[in-house]
Length: 126
Length: 126
DNA sequence: TGCAAGCCTGCACAACCGCGCAGGTGTCGT
DNA sequence: ACGACACCTGCGCGGTTGTGCAGGCTTGCA
Image 1 (cartoon, chains in turn purple, green, cyan, yellow):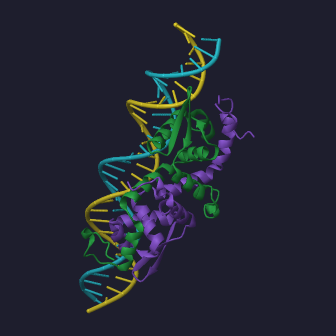
Image 2 (cartoon, chains in turn orange, blue, purple, green):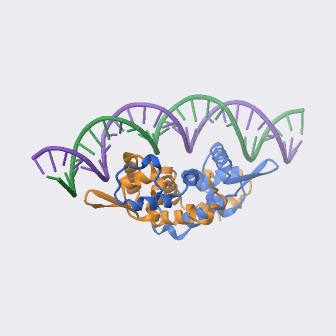
Image 3 (cartoon, protein in one colour):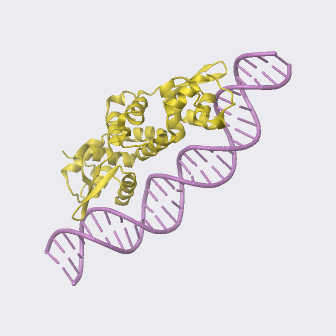
């Protein structure tokens, strides 16, 4: 099983066969890139708090989200804009209020198994 | 249930009670911050590839990781430094070779349920 | 119709981050 | 002891990102 791209052949290796195994584990580069972007959306405390709020209580308005997270309205709007562009959340207009909800099941899964899961055994509180 | 911090009281709200629910869902701010940093480590394609490789094939040397990911040796070293400082990976010296392995079960869980899980139904391949 | 509320946008600033290059340290083989 | 190898570090650059402020647009209410 030789998965080494040609532009990297001819180099010295330590374990050799393990490299191919590692490449197989990494899998498609596009998928990795996609997930890196996804994780990037969760890498901001504000956005993560917004997503946690939306995940646990469902549809919420911008003002309430700002109140719950302590962020300014424009910051919340900006964060939601990114999340909306990534397809993670969706907003529904109800009069002059826009309620947002989580639409990406993959993100929900990560939040559930990661932040809200029992995985905190290694995370601690600080 | 009034979880609203005093510095935000007296403001107008849309749903009111839902705000407290959201705050409860967000939980401890320190945990959110901690997880945001954790996700930040996964937000780079290089680091994510490294972690995937370590997660699937176990202990790997820097050279092999560089070969598998297509990164330069210094870039791999730098990335591993960050991950080591965060307690996500650990390196064991074997002669002049240092083999790294994944030590954070929470990250492993996220990789398993996120990137490697069936959650790709929404991620696609590109 | 006039006013207030809710939400969105543009702009400019500062900070951070990842990368590549060059050079250093410790270890193994001859 | 000498050279080669594996790994680490400092420095500087370019790109990206989060943030605050001020202002505009749509909607609801009196």
